[in-house]
Length: 199
Length: 319
Picture 1 (tube, rainbow over the protein chains, first blue to last red):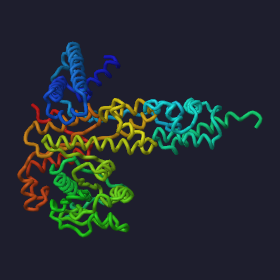
Picture 2 (cartoon, rainbow over the protein chains, first blue to last red):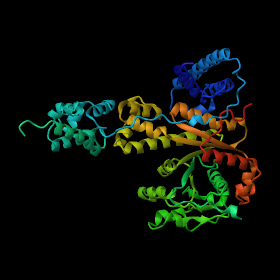
Picture 3 (cartoon, rainbow over the protein chains, first blue to last red):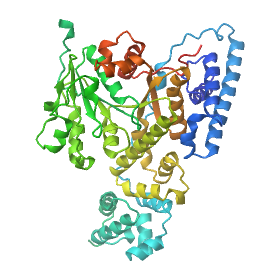
Picture 4 (cartoon, rainbow over the protein chains, first blue to last red):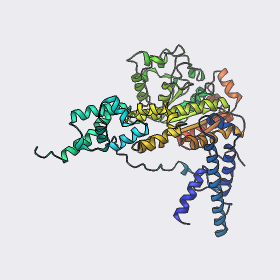
């Protein structure tokens, strides 16, 4: 079997809440259990149904169904190729692999977390137009644009920038201190690497 | 008898804190905590139980200990009180208890800083395990203590009301965890705002809320992955009467995973047993005097699974 299909099978097994060593009998039993649990008249879903739309339940059912069908097809191919390794070997104990190693997260360097583009994205996700921030803070729109674009050459001195960032961050309900500290770190670095001509 | 003396506990090693909660009252939290504690103590581990059910403390009754003057309330009212001085012995070797107080402190007097101190000091108690009995409900005091534990255990009984309350409790825990994490990164108020106005952002539930933050505040992604990825809720079912009740744990585990993206582990169940009721009435600690009962064996399995991070398979009880 190819490495790719192995990963696919593992994913299907995890949809059925099984480890990679699951037998055909375990696959079938898990499928029946989940079909019943996520059926429309499942009593355990009523407390949660309030929060989630019906499509979510149907999507879960569909995923379970598709995973099961793919696994079934796979088991049939394997039993055809290796007749001896059939359903009989159901000796696999509940495998500890279910709690296997968690996927390593990318080492999150949050040092430069509040970048201009990140701030812009946050602002947009909150549905706040620049014009509204301008009206509330009196900071010019072009200035706000420069902050978000990190056009450092269009930004004022640190003292004023600090005030503008504070207003801006406050308007997005972000912690101003953290935004300022983050942003100014980048600003300072730019300044160091771009000394003003004639200074 | 030498084998009843606990292995010396090296003070450098912090105690492992287990917290038991679940939203609804009357599910048997105090019974479970006293029984698990007895079970661990009988395995020669030093254990301290803490009754954090400030409104309705009765852990002492399960262990036949008189209500102590040195209760947890003292810790909140007297700035100089030390947690280790509040531990009273029980009739069981290796098992100590910090009682709660029936004339309890009001939740408001449990200040943030005092609470933080309590949480830090729990792990510093001279014992291998510290088991905390949290009360019913979703008060921030309960949520924070729960979140600070090394093992978060939720107890549910096979009744729809209990499932309902547990679901609400788990949502509260998750939300609290999220907000406290985001606070560390300067995002608390923004996230709160989005949640309060969630309808206008098309957010219908906690899962979509987390997805929304992940999508739009991209650098939060590794933080959320790290903080929520390593988060495991341990489930226990009490008063199970048939195999369908036993499967409740596996079903909830599945629902939490598929709906909330929350990892849960089904640690075990306890079948309904009249002996439990008798032990409380006769004030005889269950795990000492009813050792041959089926329930006490199930509690041993449950404790063993929790100690070794194992769980019972979904196929349990099926042919």
